[in-house]
Image (cartoon, rainbow over all chains, first blue to last red; front, side, top):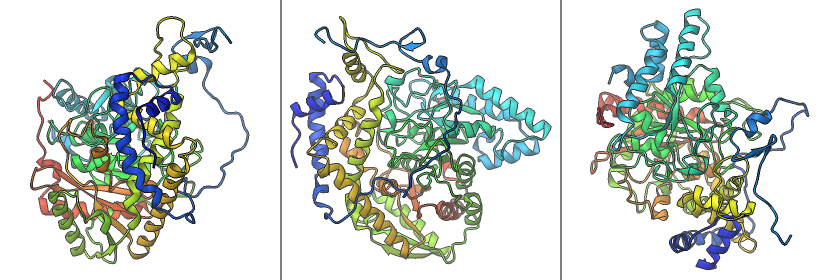
Length: 99
Length: 509
């Protein structure tokens, strides 16, 4: 099992889109290493011939008729938005200057 | 405190029916009790939001219906508290997180809609570990809930608010959710009843997901019959939740009434060896467990030993599958459409706003689990972690299947210890996780479980829970055995366990 370094935690936080401060990294990285160590036994717990289970109760695809049902109004959907403009969600710029 | 508050929901329904109390009077009594014990620095703090006006209006509407003889359900007019992870029109839904502070959802969870349609006034929203991640309710961004038995101790988690509300007689009924024990463990440490039904027996629509394949809504009450009445009210198929079970399950109310006779002749009870032997089990917990087992034997049950060897790996499998699902689920908190938006100085991009918002909005435990899940789902680690955990899940299901060949129900203590002191394990995630040892296997396998109060541990005088598990869709069995044990224990004690709890009057002041 690979260990998890402080740099790796920083990289994972980046992937997860969380700005961790240096203090947070110092605090969380050793804890995560300890948690991973405790779950490491799992790699040897099962042989290859055991199938995986993703869902507790076996299910087949669930379909419904394609009928129109009432949804949220624009007002309801926008009511709790951080910012709105012309009945739309208003978001910060998504591209940099160079793009 | 008026005697009214100590009544069970079933008794309250009778009092309402015979006209000796109104829903308005009952709801007001709950609200007064909440003011009395819940607020202030030393209050129980079971509630994050109290909707006095809405609850009284709903109660008045119930009384008006009753006057016309047009009741909506057997529990019409009996007030209830709802865990703050289920969406409610008109009431904030924060999931115990700063990222959803003040968020008022535009739709009701199916469970909430069913409560409203059944005429139950909703008192408010109960405290919880942030996004249901924790076993102590200390991970709430709005401060911990205190255990009504000892205000310096944890009420369990993540649903400590719902359990404490019921234990402190602030509400006769509450709704909880259980992903790895969040209904049953708080039930155990507060001396109340909690049920995790079969996965899919109650709709998850409008439940803010932590781990979809494990999350389950269920009842939090003071008696087994009350839990059964509540499960029948909120359960059943929901077209809005494709994973909800479409076929009917046997009546759990009938099962609870049958069990209350105290006769278990012909019932085979399997004691899970892996959850009753070895280290880490508090002596007082085991003493109450053993006594309860003897009572079941005296009531005619046949006690057998069963072994579930894969349970050894359940905790590891759970603490991989859950963070993987949680990290995916929480990706939706991106500061764009709802929730907290933190804008750094300058002209930040959407991605920079997202990073800053998620850092400010999520607490430590949520960050730990998101990063753990991101790691375990990363290319190169996926097979070693997530893939293996899913295989362990298969082995655990096989263990359950084999055990249920030998016994009708399986039993263990609900939690290995009684309530610990606030702060004791707050920054030691592994120590906290180990408290879920006995409850996690049933979530991995989707089977139902109940926790029933089993008495007080000798060493600290704090409540102990007795857990009963049954095969999927056989929820009736946990109610039958749970109700039987409740009857037998209360006969021995001369009344409910909560009669021994501190009165708490004036703690909020």
